Image (cartoon, rainbow, N blue to C red; front, side, top):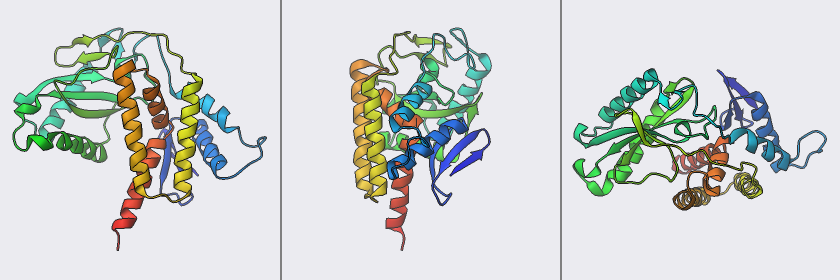
Length: 286
């Protein structure tokens, strides 16, 4: 079923309790619902679009590339003052909430699609806090897990938007490198650390289309067979490794990263996470 919530359209399971996907238009929600039904049953092709046609349509509509930065938050190459000020305010609030010493914070940066040319209406504003992890006391061997947990907890308990875009916050080690050709903007200094590079990108690459289709079918098949959560944990690790390895080798627009983003945009990463959570709740309940 499809449920309208504000300006979003949610694809729900038959009980109306589990979210299978979130979309900016009813058309996209209907397309996902149809694709799910196709993976469960054979239907008359005159009534439901072919699965491959669905993927091809979604691939070109969710993955986008532009000649200019997002005009909602940028004036050319200059970040709008109200956006910058609000992001700094959010960042400082997060730093205090996460109990990170002020002296450990070295910068606040804007990265991701909204600091590059591959933004979409669904793209998050990725706010990263650059920290010197050596300046954070107590249990240094656990600091990475602590920061990841804080990121997740904040996301679960806050819903912050800037001009329609969700704000995603993450604490990043100042010694970690940046992705090749990726734009990195310093909010503290109000200038570019690395300017984004406009490239020729083929978003209709048949390899990407084929792999997205394979993974969607695999996810739906695992759910239909009531697979254990370990199967999805392994799949999540595979996606993570595929994405990070390809980004390091080939940059932001590597196949692995584009496949990951398309699965995320179609709601299949959320679908996996929701399934894992449900299985964990069942296992832990008495």
